[in-house]
Image (cartoon, rainbow, N blue to C red; front, side, top):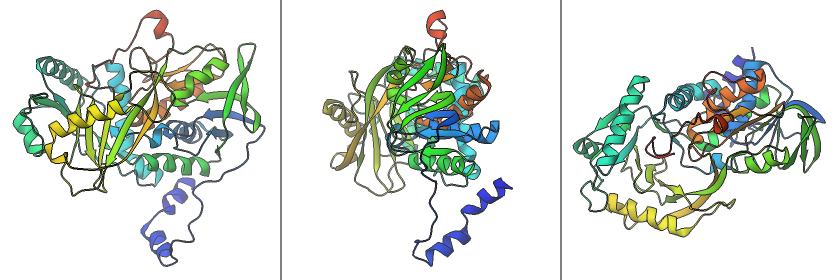
Length: 421
């Protein structure tokens, strides 16, 4: 009965009804309650991963006494500070299964949440600029096909047909071919947070905004709750999904995580008519570009070369990225940039995430996504909810445990996935 009510919320009839009332009578999408004294599960971090975790905990595991605690507004962290690329063409089996689980959820997420994710499977292209790139990409394509993923090799003439504006014969970065996943694409980042928030709220999850978690309280090797700007809140379980700040919170519980936090930058151009209908990425320069539905070019760079918790980043990275973009696409040379921003990414030594419980009973971490967190949002949330609810990993995230850093069973995706985005 609940599912039917959810599906009825957004329809052509409700749109027409509110259009005639100047769109002034829409109900609030979710409540903003004050925190209760205790919860069964507290999820720290109100981004897509955190809200999705709460949604799946309530929907698939029947846990309803849940709070999502966010220090700002929901989606104000990395969920709203990325370039929204979605793909699953990673090299190693563990990565391919995890990211493709997410792509499959993306494909039906708008219907499940009854909220338009603006998911566009326009394809993702990874360019090869030298012989080494060619060999590595063809190796990855073979591995992808063994895992049932839809990755193919494109010759230069195929790339020109898909992206006519690309200068494939430029001197610095000649384009010799590309790996291409047609099921990849982009989605609307805000919509992901809003959709999960709405449906989690309907199932009784408390979404608490503007409440900063200062520390995690433990006793005798077991979690007791969190100390926040609104006081202490007790919990049987605490699930931390705080992106770049996860290592800081883990330290308050006596847990040392192998993470480095760095700024990752992006910028958006003025809107123009459609000129590029796919996502194009280049590992050689860490420059990638897609075009939004509004016509803006969404341009991304690599991480800055230093650890930082700023949301800005250095201008030298922007300069090098724009220089490469203009060389690959001369048509963009006279365009103006409208805005620039940075997110804080947390990076593991093997460029793969952590989705794991730890030595403190009742404490769980979902972190270390580096620059690849957005694409994994629904899949990550789904398997993390399973881990939190059952105190055991889902088979898909079993390999992404903390123990791998001591037993040496790393999932080394450094460069193996073309770029870590």
